[in-house]
Image 1 (tube, rainbow, N blue to C red):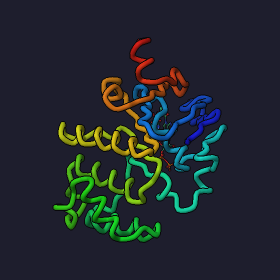
Image 2: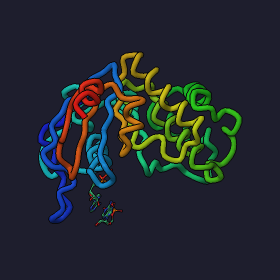
Image 3: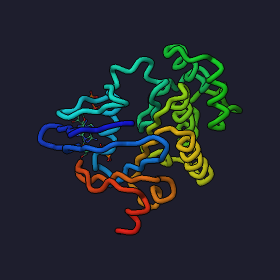
Length: 218
Ligand code: ADP
Ligand code: ADP
């Protein structure tokens, strides 16, 4: 379970995330909906300790991200600017990540298979299409077999087959009892994947409701 409590981020005078409090539960896909600039990425970055809150907190099963031992085994994420070493093969990018996080090498081949990149595993990732890069980012999120997965706008750059694939992947991961938190600026996308919806606008919480209730009320 993830708990945001009064989470706030200011950049100068600009309030990117404003007193955001909510709980993200396991065993379902929680959608994080809001227009571009609403504060979704900033929130996710703070959840992963990539950015410091101005005030408020994030707790992951009661702990701060920094207190997690072997965080990749606990929480995996696909963010926009997923840094991969373009000069390395897909395999070696994942292998480096595995080795620095005490994850067995066999997981590299497993996650490459899961995301459908086995055939191009030895190719340099800088030659990858946007969709292949997205799949590689998802592979890195899955590497530690984490209980919590966060995906920031995951369908961006994917072709229709890839979009279908990631929707199913998220549902499968949720059915295994994992916590899935996925952002999108498109209600149509959320309606196809999310069981629960957290809506933000200008950094503020606008709705926190089951998808069924949200559709009935809107
Ligand atoms: P650093 O990681 O060195 O803090 P960033 O690359 O995040 O810097 O950003 C550099 C500058 O660009 C920031 O000081 C900020 O003012 C501006 N900036 C970055 N991202 C955004 C954004 N999404 N919207 C507005 N300004 C931004
Ligand atoms: P979303 O992911 O919902 O599109 P973001 O979290 O990227 O929204 O951005 C929320 C707001 O914060 C935007 O107005 C954006 O310009 C601003 N912002 C994000 N990062 C920075 C930064 N490093 N410096 C200044 N402003 C930023």
